[in-house]
Image 1 (cartoon, rainbow, N blue to C red):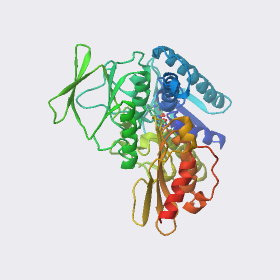
Image 2 (cartoon, rainbow, N blue to C red):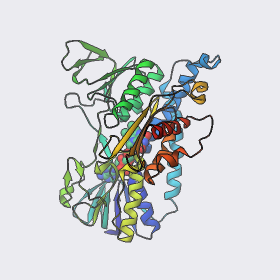
Image 3 (cartoon, helix red, strand yellow):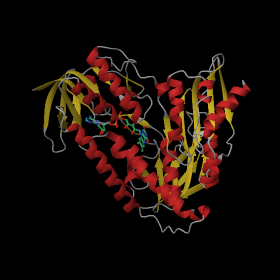
Image 4 (cartoon, rainbow, N blue to C red):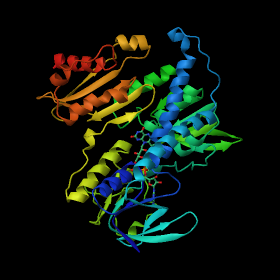
Length: 455
Ligand SMILES: Cc1cc2nc3c(=O)[nH]c(=O)nc-3n(C[C@H](O)[C@H](O)[C@H](O)COP(=O)(O)OP(=O)(O)OC[C@H]3O[C@@H](n4cnc5c(N)ncnc54)[C@H](O)[C@@H]3O)c2cc1C
């Protein structure tokens, strides 16, 4: 039986980062990756990157359709999703090549197949062709990611009731698309399909979109969507989705009226990928569906660790990657460091974009300030809505503890506030920083100044 210092299950941002760093620190590492994805995990194969490639096409299409706003005569024919997907696939191939290029020269040992526990040190790897082998790890990292959650009354069928995985493979533009779930995935697909020309209804059970974020920001996003023509129904529950004659009949809770749509994307969340791992064989405990870990990512079995989406925390690629790097250092140096989730930017690539950092509500000893979107030079010439900015700070010290931005390039603008939160910078320090003209970021510094004067 082949034996390694560390066996890593899953080659996404968390597992790949931890595995490659441990290899660089001279550990013998086996990286086990299921055959249905290339290295890069959900992020590269079925998540961040394909959505961003298609969202870029959506932006280009939106500009082409709104050329007259800029004094341009542009023409935009109908969207051919097959062609867009082919272009996106070419980008993904480039990125996969870049990852392979970093793996190839490294002494890491690759196994393709599904890994599951045989015992607390042994992993069974089963390939699609039915062949299998067992390897041994002195230590083991579980980094198997997450999968889409189904609605109990409407399981995925891949044709009418779709997960984000299905949606990314879809090549037909639905005339009417219902999106269930106003979280990041629902909002990004709403932007994408509305831009491509579908009539989109976005339904969220909570009172605001992005319900884990600040309510005012969620409301600002909902208003922007409504202004564009996306129908947003918050505080609304779906009771039934019935496929009839090639369409889906939507029944809302507490209402007699029904709606007919062509396809439904269910984006009600993701659950940790623990199915099939045979965790009982190793005694690894699960809590609320996620692998139970200490802040330093140790499971209930001391030599087994877990990182990324499978631990159920912030399900973001950069959180998994950073946690993977911290875990690798912990394992190599016997340290106990943990990921500070307050320092992880939370990003949504909708139109407008949303980005947040740190706290999302006023806690004891804190204050907040919301700046109503003020047009600035850049927003006027770009012909976009000015950024909504909300800031949180400690009452006494004015140290910035959180922020949320809704607007053009918010996912880029958030980093100065991430730096501020991470390094306990004050409103004064950020306010004294000269911001280039004309940029959308001037709204951040304007918000900081108003917050200071208000205090
Ligand atoms: C549509 C969509 C859009 C997203 N957009 C963004 C975004 O813009 N920005 C962002 O930060 N995050 C985004 N995410 C979230 C991001 O993709 C995840 O947070 C990130 O991929 C998690 O990394 P991970 O390493 O924990 O797991 P994953 O990336 O899920 O990787 C785990 C890998 O392990 C493999 N695996 C599973 N079980 C086994 C097994 N038993 N044996 C071997 N291999 C196994 C899986 O096939 C997978 O390839 C998006 C997700 C989705 C679905």
